[in-house]
Image 1 (tube, rainbow, N blue to C red):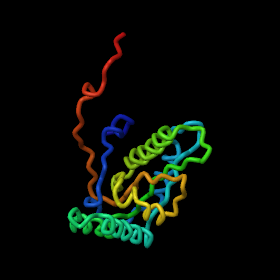
Image 2 (image 1 turned 180 degrees about the vertical axis):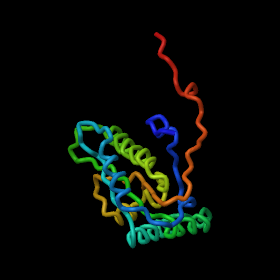
Image 3 (image 1 turned 135 degrees about the vertical axis):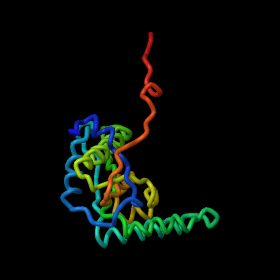
Image 4 (image 1 turned 90 degrees about the horizontal axis):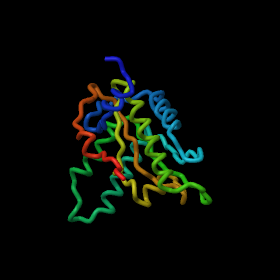
Length: 193
């Protein structure tokens, strides 16, 4: 079937590390995703997104840091070894990760929520860009220490930076495209004055 924008949107799926083969994606794929992210709408053309590519030895260090944060910040009664093991297994599964950061200037004339929405639109562009790569999958994670100060410091983020998660990527043998969605009627109404 010929790809068109409607199919690309409807076939977009979050593909998780448990589905990754462990093979590395070519860096050119990551570059294309980031270039397409840069075309997202953003108020006053302020480009509020910042992306940090995490790969190779840095990827292993980042995963270890996420596991350490989970262990250090989780009360003993809530700690789950399976979650720790799942995180550490990313070292064998994940090819690349991209830290998703919203950067706001101190004297920004834009509204924070507009910048957050712009960053989300940039991530959606990355998601949709994966369509052209039958063996590349990804998902937006807000785990892995996203909201912790130790991870903020680990990534070298400044006081005007908000870590919004990671776009976690890997090679897949067979990418899912089918999905279940509620009908649009559940979410749309008309204003009747």
